[in-house]
Amino acid sequence: MKIKCEDIGDSGLTSSFLKDVDWLNELISDLKTKDFSFSKPMNLTLTATRSGGNIFIRGKIKTTVILSCARCLESFEYPVNTDMNLTFVPASERPLQVEDTPAELEFYEGDTIDLSKDMRDQILLAIPLKPLCKDSCKGLCPQCGVNLNMESCNCHRVTFHSKFEILRGLVK
Ligand SMILES: [Zn+2]
Ligand SMILES: [Zn+2]
Image (cartoon, rainbow, N blue to C red; front, side, top):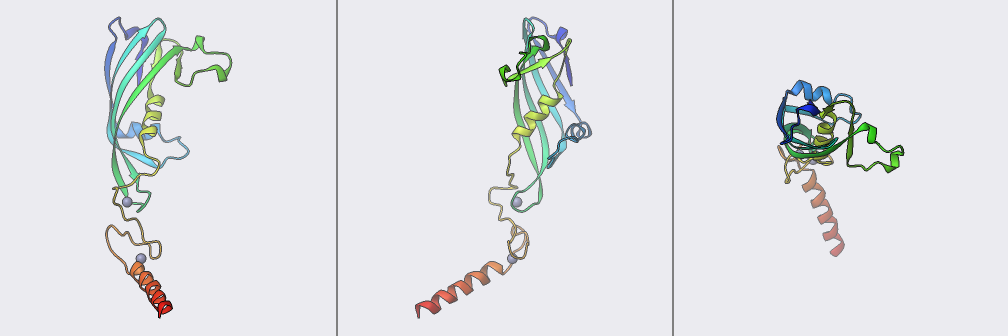
């Protein structure tokens, strides 16, 4: 997913990329904590403008990932719609000290910008840390482990009742 700097004219460059599921899953295959996968192709539309050697990218990312719910552990599809705003500076202008480097700057070498990694990072940021299949997800029963969205169990009622009985016993 590359942009050639020479293609960015005075009025900028508008471009779009469509990446299939296999390509996307390959892109995240080296992530250490990979707890999602792609289920739909990704569409990226962007405009690139330049000022001297600096290149500004504004893009919109659209895709769908499969996450597992933090409460009930079921897989579910999660639509990702996120923006990408990047500023690329020629690598020759990179400060010598890493700590002097502004975090929001990206660097490019030669006349090509590769957006794959930045796009991946942007998608990672758009994925919730504790994904829920739905806000009202009831999760798993901590005692018998059934998925309380699909079936009910008697564990809670039994516990509640016995506590209630004990309390009633105390009051008497
Ligand atoms: Zn759930
Ligand atoms: Zn239960």
